[in-house]
Every structure is written in structure tokens, then in C-alpha cells.
Image (cartoon, rainbow, N blue to C red):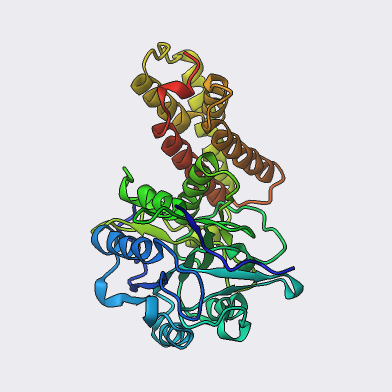
Length: 391
């Protein structure tokens, strides 16, 4: 039997670069057993501890930098003290991921959400932790990246009401403040006893079975959101930057053990506009490349199997992303859940083209964004199944 997490609501690598050498901190807060008559949950602690072990064993998180509060230890006082401790510990080279799994409430008259600590009293909001308090901590943390993952009901009340335009910039060196939630302003499933919640299961599957050696926060959110929307009716996860708390367009990346940050930092290049000679060289190179393609057209046989198709699409995307997007969209069956994924990716690419046409994006920035879309495209192609394709 499923339970629900809510008290009912009322009314490319460059080894020469000096990448940040700070620590990755992890704060785990999870509550199954509540005092004072609040309904217990099935899997909050199980989900959180499995998530902790996954990050410590497979990703660049050290156990000595993990704070864990579960059940009776996760009181209002202890949670606030943990955030106070992190405020003192974090430097501008460090990163923080916090994971909350437990009850949540949304109080409509003041349009505010709350976390429910283990010692809370039913319907006594003074014993809860306001989302506004959590956001205040996020705002003052000195960390480079802060990522919150919240598996509770009404979690999207943490977000500002105004929607942000999705951004593709993934400069690791720029600060970020990002949140991934299990739902919006609706109850979310805790899952059957002894199992993971649907949100936690999807989150950990993406990290556990990742074929690459890293995944960016936005890619992780994208995959989790679409897995939940496809499998769980009525639950709408959300993942986007937080407003007005210090987000500057950067993004945290989950790195497997022993891997470097998988980006080239273009910040220095952005300070210098290309010279006329550089621009001419780019134009001449593009013209030369076009002439070569016209003179020696590439002969590609129609792929007949799924592995052939995946290889073909990934190679095509590296050469001509627009053509690759058109190609895959023409091959997908109408009932494939991958359709929306590629439509969203096409929309991102069209936005990039528009920004370039209007001259509002620096050259190097456009290169980074296009490479990110190519990475996402190739990752989605890896997820294609035979039943997704019109053969």
C-alpha cells in the first residue's frame, strides 16, 4: 500500500585549467517515524540512505563530509543546526547537495510550504520549518553550487512564482542554486512498504546506471522528470534554478570517482571579442568545409538495426545537429514517450539559433550551448528502444 508525503493542505576536458578544488558536502534529512500523531511514512529513510551510499561509493562525495539526520534525530532544532553548521563550513570552492525526504505541507492562505520535522505537532505550523527559511540559507551559503533534492508533498512551493526561461549554460565555475522536487503543489507517492518512492527510484536509477562518467544537474532533472511523467499519473516533478538566491548560470555536475570536471572553461575567452582575422579564418574554414562536403558527399547506408541507427544519429548530430533532430523526429512513433524529449531538445536548439541570429549570445557561449544540446541528444539516442522507431 502506498503512502503519501503530505499533511493535507488547508485552503570536452582541459587538464591545463585549474578547476575548483573544494569539497562536496551532502546533507541527508529523512523521516519515517513521526511523533505527535503525524502519519508515518514507508520509505523516506530507506530512499535517503540509499541515495547517500550511492553518492559516497560511486561519486565524488567523501563520507566525512556527509551529515545525516533520520527519524528522531531530524528534529526542527537539529535541522536548523545542520544548516547553521554548513553556513560556517562552506567556502566559495565547495558544493552542497541536500536531500530531504519526509512530510511537507502547503498552507494556502499565506501561499507557503513547510517541511515537517520529526518532533512537529500536527497542525502547529510554528513547529514546522518554513520553505522561506531554507531559501534564506541557500541565499547566504558561500558555496559555488547548491543543489536541493526534495522528495515531499508541495515541494515546489520552494520555487518563486515567476517562471524562469530555461538556460543551457553549464559553466562549472559560475555559482548555481538549483532545486529538483518530487512534485509541485500536489501529494506525491512514498511507494509501497520496503520499496523506493517513484521519485527516489528514478533519481537513483539515473545515477546508478549512468553510462557516462558524469551527469549535469539539468540532464539529471530532465531524465527524472520525464521518467516520472511517463510512469506516474498526477505527479509532476520539477527541476530548475532558484530565483534571487545567487544563481549565476552555473551548474553542478555529478562526477564519478576519479574523474575531472568535463568542461572547458570559456570565461577568459568571453572577455575578448574575435579579431577580424579570426572571424575571417572561421568563415574561410566554414566555406572550405562546405565545399569539401559538396565535392565528396558522404555515403551513408540506411540503418537497419537499432545499434546502427544509434551510431548513425550520434555521428550525424556531431556534424549537423539540426539535421539529426529532424531525422530522429521523423522516425519516432507517435506513441513513443521519447517524442516529447526530442521536441523539447529541438525547442532548445531553435532558441539557440534565434539568439545567434539576433546577435545576443557570444560566439564561445553559443559553442558551449550547442555542445550541451549535442550531449543531451546523444544521451537520449542511447535510451531509444526498437518500439520507439518506425521501421
